Length: 408
Ligand SMILES: Nc1ncnc2c1ncn2[C@@H]1O[C@H](COP(=O)(O)OP(=O)(O)OP(=O)(O)O)[C@@H](O)[C@H]1O
Ligand SMILES: [Mg+2]
Image (cartoon, rainbow, N blue to C red; front, side, top):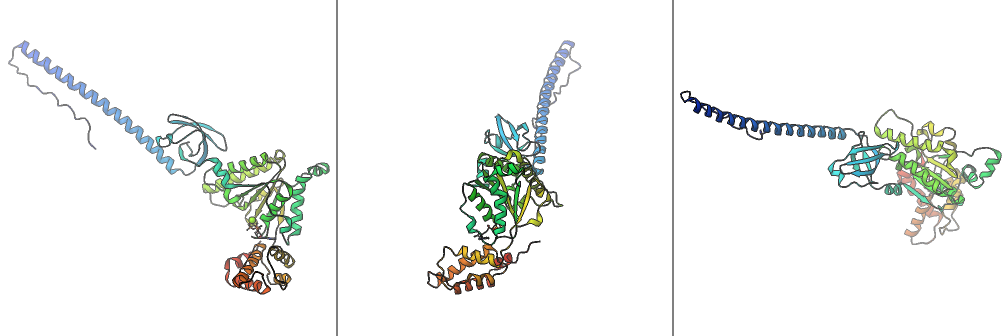
């Protein structure tokens, strides 16, 4: 480190003691002036050094703070309310706390009121996020009317009946529940192995009721930034309120409602917060109006009991793998649009496919069609189905694994 401004030479002067008094006095005065001047220079240099020291100190504090910021991993979601030169007012999502905070020049140029930002514990802006509308659009899927109907679902008639009673009827005839004096179930949870028709069932309900169908996958709710997941949950219910009657469907709910684990990472905490928001939205049931909530999971064993409490998901409907009669029905459904030969025997195919889910039966039908095409035919025969079954049983490990999925 170089010592900036060099020190002035100390004035040195030999004063001849033999000089007459007046000359000696003059020389001394001259010397005094030189010393005084040097002193002044030194004083100003000292000032400059002091100033520089305080600058460096401020810089060090800033760097330290930035270092802290970088070290702390928890980020919160906030919206920029106002920008005044190098300071911004941000409003943290979740608690709506408004804070005036300094912003680094790097961000000051790019930030605009309304921007979503990620802030740390001390409200330092860490990142500018994509527009909120983007996040919403990516996550929430709104379909005015899904095209799945009950006629497309086979083998789970009892589950269809239960869902209709719990979701469709309260939407269609709310006065019935009022007269009898009971509250319809708050939320319906469909659970069971993969590919058994849970998502279909939720869609069919929405189709039947003219309700807006708002679908969100639990895995999409698990966001990176603190406050974002709960924000999305709030948006979800808000959107539903704007579009009543509506059916909110949360698929893969296990992603946000898994039982608490031992680990205490901030990611888990965020998932917890998202779940808490969901619970609080569900607890505000009275103001919810014409909104029904359906959730689905194939990991029932993982769910936190909190979401199963009365007033929340209090109607549990198990959607199992189809039995033989169910499989026959599903074969029929998935071959409705296919040109199938007279000889095709669905009862026999059903008997040959124990443990197959609806989704797997669908893929058998598609595969059979592929065999027909490969053999230059436009109609599908029993032999095509047998070949498809053989192929799937022999080769497709993935399908066999999920067919053997057991639920405890
Ligand atoms: N019971 C059924 N009747 C007719 N088709 C079915 C049935 N179950 C599943 N399928 C077929 O499998 C596909 C996947 O079903 P769906 O998405 O409803 O499964 P899921 O139970 O939601 O599975 P996951 O737990 O993996 O989400 C459907 O599009 C449909 O073609
Ligand atoms: Mg599904």
